[in-house]
Amino acid sequence: MIAIINYGVGNLFSLESSFNAIGKNVKVTSDPEDLKKAERIILPGVGAFEDAAKKLKSSSKKLKEANRF
Image (cartoon, rainbow, N blue to C red; front, top):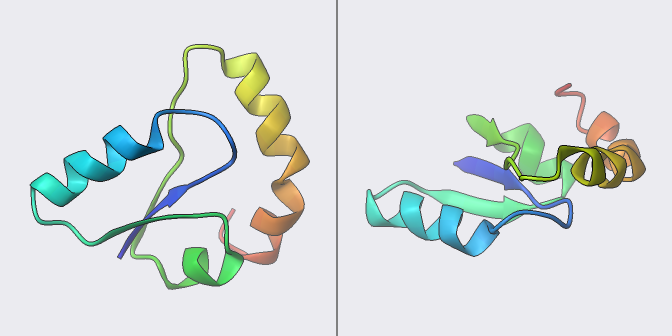
């Protein structure tokens, strides 16, 4: 499974739809357990990186629990 990290920014629906269109098993998630199980992890890009970095930092506790970063 490919995990797309949901941290409150980015067009996750479009990204998820693109992977589904090419037959990939993908899940939009912020659950540390899903991130642990994922074969690949995608951190969606955004045009306003500073805002995204702030949101990511605020959710980093969950991400650290996943022991993947």
